[in-house]
Image (cartoon, rainbow, N blue to C red; front, side, top):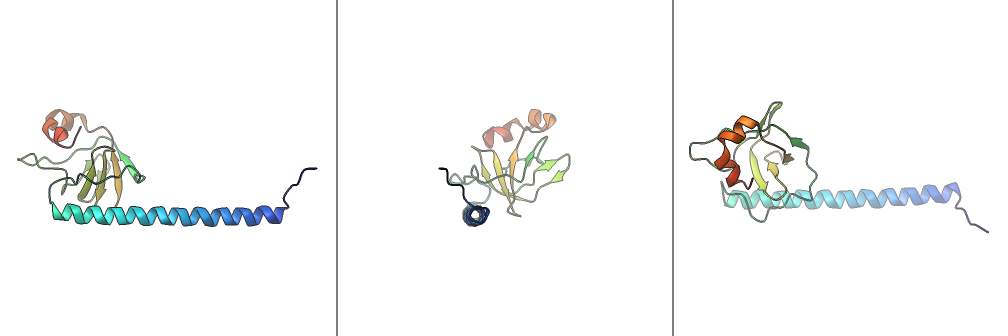
Amino acid sequence: MTLTPSPVDLTKTSLHILELIGESEQHFLEQAVRAESESRKAVADQPGVPHAQLSLASVAPKSLLRGWWVELQEDGGPIIGTAILTPHGKTSEVIGYDPRSRRILTKSLSVYELGLPQTTFAAHGRQFLRQIGW
């Protein structure tokens, strides 16, 4: 004899699962926002230097930026404090960078993953790319 749950039981179970998923998502988002806030404070403490403890690997990026570039400073300045330019527009100011995942955190608290840079920029910005771990 096989016991099959009634549709009412399935609905209750489904609702319970959705509640758990919702709580889990909310908890994850709260952790991500907390981590972003902490990284913002760390970056503010060390302007111009990517924070070594920053890890954005667990945060889903808003999008993958392909063909990106930055306006190079004469001193070959760091990625923090710049905007990432793309053929489709630009990001807000970068406040955090995770070289392992190649993800940036912007002033608007958006996370982007850096894809391949623009070819011309890659050729002329080799020093900059080395500085950020490429």
